[in-house]
Image (cartoon, rainbow, N blue to C red):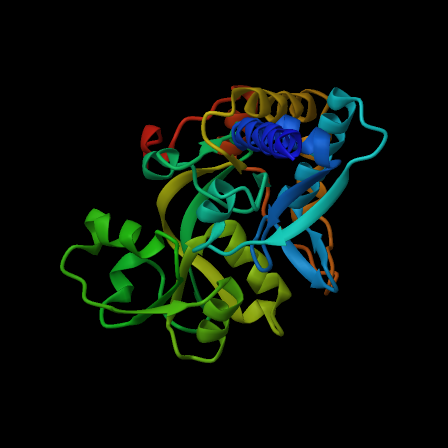
Length: 300
């Protein structure tokens, strides 16, 4: 009987040891499980769902390319991808607690998030802008006085507006959408006069709307934000593998082809193109791969 107890104890100790090793070693976790869980978005500009568990978009497909590079690196005959939808509120905790291995949504790399997670090299540089109805008469920050502004819960867009010197002395009402689609609906239905968010998210929601010509993105760039895939903190081997794949995709031109596919060509579900050309800031991030936070960027 004693032997059995000891054996059970030894097995439990080994299991605990491997679980502990895997907490900080995503590559080992992927190799032993034969699967990887991607954090994906349902209504973002860089990733969205077509329903029935199908997730698409620039960042989603880029992440799938990262996975195929990881599969090669680990020498796996196959590597199953599990898709875990995340929101602005739960994306950091789901990476931290091991539910999601790699989150490639529309997450800004900033200093406060760097305390909780690591970021891969920047793959998209976002500009926060203002979307309005084309007939609203709003052309920039100064016209937001007395208006109702919507943004999405768990995002930093309105804080960014409040910090903008051009917003000094303005009073506006702030409402929150539970996700980007909900925020856009508030603009569409007239419950909000302006939707402040990442330009790619605004452009994507406008292109998917019933009447894209009824909306426009106006005014000043409120902030410049590096968007990157998020992973667990202090997992250097996994971060290097993800970064290496991103560099490969930049160098062989496949990342630019993906960008063209998702932003300059007609996309599902409505076969409308977003029409957001590759920005100078994103080109620069690709030419000089880095994981600098938003605080290192200057708003002109």
